Image (cartoon, rainbow, N blue to C red; front, side, top):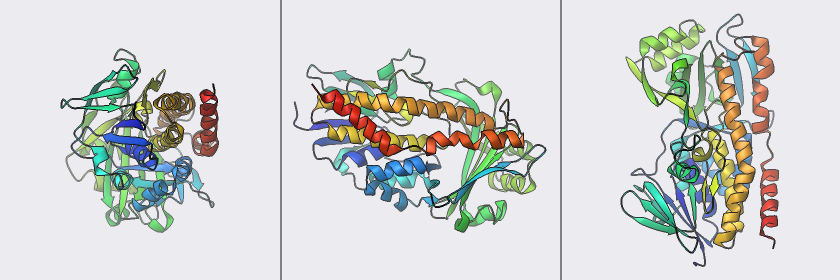
Length: 422
C-alpha cells in the first residue's frame, strides 16, 4: 500500500477544479484530475456565488477566494424580483440589499475555472480521459479504465463529472431511477452582451456597474433575468419558458425562432420587450437548452467512490445554487480527506461527507424546482399575485444563504473523529 493517499477526480469542471485546488496543499495526498474533453474548459455562461458559498470559499483558504476575485467576479449590491405581467406589471415584488453583508457575486464559469486550475501542475491534469469503468482490487485500491484503453491506479475516486455522470451510474447502478437526470420542462436561452450594448437596450438604471444588481422578472409562464459580470465588461441576459409537454422528456436542446420569442414577450413592459428583441432576436433562430435536475439519490458514496457537484445533485438554476453547492462540497470533502492518514480513513471521510451533505443538497434541488414554478408565474397560490409573491418568494432563499458553513464543517469533523475512534 502506498504511503500517500492516491485520489483521482473524474471531471474537470468547476467542482473538480475546486476540489483539486483545495487538496493540493496537502503533501500526503497524490491528486490527479481527469477530463473527458480535449481541454479543461467550461461551457455555459455565468454562475452566482451567494453568501453561503462565499463563506465556504473563505474557509477553504485565501487562495480559493482570490481565484474568484481574479476571475472578474462582480459583487452584487442587491437582487430585485420584479413582476412583468398581471394587474401590477412593472411593480417590484421584493429585493435584497447588501446592507454591509455579501449577497452574491456573479462570475463567468470559464474565467473561474481557469483561475482554479492556474496553479495545478500539468502532470496532474489529464485531458481526453473519459472514464468507462473501474475495478476494485484485492488490496482495496481501484483501477480506473478509460475509453482510450489507458488505466490509472488510485485509492479514492471522486466523480465530479457533471449531470450525465458516469460515476453516479456506477455507484447507483444503471437501473436505479435516480441514476439519470430528468427534464423539468423549461427551456432557456442565454446570451452575453457587451456592457454598452446591453445598457443601451435594457436601460442605464437596471444595467449599472456602480450599482450592480441582479434583476429577475416573473411573467405568465415566462421569466427574464439579467446581471453584470466580468468586472462590468459583460451583461448576462437569460430568458426561460415553461413547456408542459417537455416535462420528463429526453430533450436536451431545441431551436427557438425570433418570432416565437417576440410573441412570448410582446405583452411585457416595453423596455424589456425592446431588450429581448435587440439582444436575442438579431438572428432568425436561437439555440435553447432545457433545464434538467437529478432525482434524489439514496447515497453519494460506495466504498472508495463518491460523487460531488452536479454529478451528485444537479439542480435547476432558479436559486443560483449549483456552483455554491459544489463549493460547499469542496469544503467538506477537502477538510475530511486532508485529515485522513490512510485510504481506509479516507473512505470513512467519504461516508461522513455523504451523511452531512446529502440532506442539504437534496433539499436545495427540491426547493429550486418549486422556486422555478413560482418564478415562471405558475405557482398554485402565487401565480401573478403581487402580495402572494411578496410573502412567498424571497424567503425561499433563507435556508440556503443564511447557512453556517463553519458549523457545518465542524460537525462533519466531529462525526469523522468519532468514526475513527476504536
